Each structure stands twice: as structure tokens, then as C-alpha cells.
Length: 324
Image (cartoon, rainbow, N blue to C red; front, top):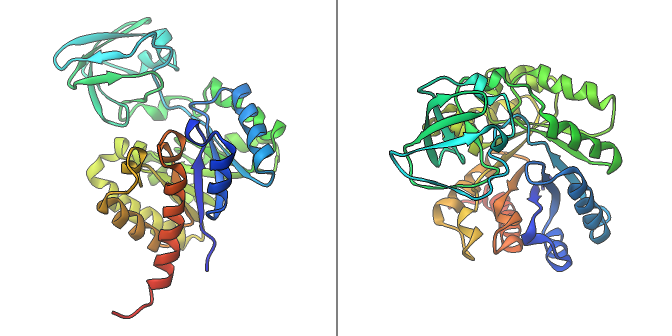
């Protein structure tokens, strides 16, 4: 049976020893620290705690990359359709975001759940018209198509977190919002030969356009379906996913997939039938592994989710060649 891995995102839901040990018994796991939610000192403590419980744990540091996000909101922003609100420079993780915008630009927030329109811009304030209803929280993405190639690949937080590769012996370094092979070479130059397995995340149109060149720099990729769908149009996602997997396997690369595989199990003990069908079909395409995000970080059933993915892999390998 081929090696298959589950990337388990760390968070409050898997903070106790019993759950972590139960998850580890399910199969070959990689434990992911999402750099968007961990500062350097907090991440280092989490790594130490994990290795106290699971000394042989393989650890992935997922850099947040140049994703523009809301930060330090004193309280959530209530979005009312047809009404405007302001985002201030200190509420955005990239202070020069305003320089990339123009009046009329559409901002997709929180993985395209919310649609906002730029009304006015100045150095300290972005005025937005909401086309959606809901609550905008801190640390949620703000995406505008066509501008992100002009934003630096690594932001300040990425540089701080990368110190952990040396101090904590990180096994995997996952690079967010890769656009070109030169982005990966930039990181390799900083690492200066440090032994860490680099994973390029495919979540931009630019990465798809430059896939062959990216393959020359890494042995593994991860298709992040959430951010990718925002950049390419969600209706194209299934086709692009299939083509990227096909190209990766042809090039002999490991390929992982992420985003909402077991979304229903964040709050309920069983998945939707559509989730199981998607999960099994994806596994049967020959991928290396699945990443669980909110399902294990904050969901109610992190152990059950992890076990279900491994069971889906085992069952699909066994029945693939069975006759009707």
C-alpha cells in the first residue's frame, strides 16, 4: 500500500494529550502550524508541547505569505448590504494595501463569503461598500484579483516565523501564495541550505501558469482550494484541480489537497454524502495526502475526522480493483 499522509492542523481542538495520541494512531500524520494564527513565541511553545507528547512528530510550518488580512479589529465589523464602512491602515496586515487599489475594485473577503467594493482610498483609510450581510472578523483574507503579483512574496511575519526552521527543527515548510519559481528561490536563499522539505502551495492563477517552473524547485505541492477558488473563479476549480493533480503526478511530485473536505464534521459527527464522494474521488486520483484545517484545529470531532480520511484511503485502495 502506498504511503498516504494526513496533515493535521493544530489548534484548541487538539490541545490535549489524549486526542493527539489518538490522532497519531490513525496513520502517518504531519502536524501543521498555521502561521496566520501563531506568532513566533507561541508557535515555538506549541512545537515544544507537541514533541513532549509525540517525540517523533513531523511538523509543518505553514507561512501565511502575502495574503492581505484584517488584523487587530477591536470588535467584529457588522456588514450590512448597501452600507459603507471604513478599514483603517492599522486594521490591515499590509500597510501599503491601499496603493494597489482603485475606486470600483471588488474585494472578496473571508474566502469569498463577503463581497465588498472600494469606494474611496487614502493613506490611512479604505472606504468599502458591502454587497453582503454578515460579520467580518480579524485575520480574514481580503482578496482583489490581479493585484497580488505586485505585493512582496514574504511579509514581516513570514520572516519572523522562518527563524523556527532553525530553532525548532521544522520538517516541512509550506509556502503560501507562490506565484513563480523565483518566489521559492527567494526562500531557499534565506534558508541557506537548511534541511527542510519545501511545499509550494498552489492557490493563485500565476502558480498555475508557472507550474512547470515551480516543479523544478520543489518535490511537493499543495492545492489550497479555498484561496485558489477566489483567484480563478470557483466554477473553474474542479477542472483546475484535476489538471494540476494530473500534471503533478506526471512530473513525479507529491501532491496534497486542502480546504473543506469534512466541513460538516466541524460541528456534526458525520460528513455529508457529497463530502465523502469528493474525498474518495480525490484520494483515488493518486494524491499523497489530505490537509485538515478547521476540522482538526477548532472542530468538535478532530479524531473522527482524521480516522475517517485514513479509512477512506484504505477502503478505496482495497476496493479499487474489485469486480462488481
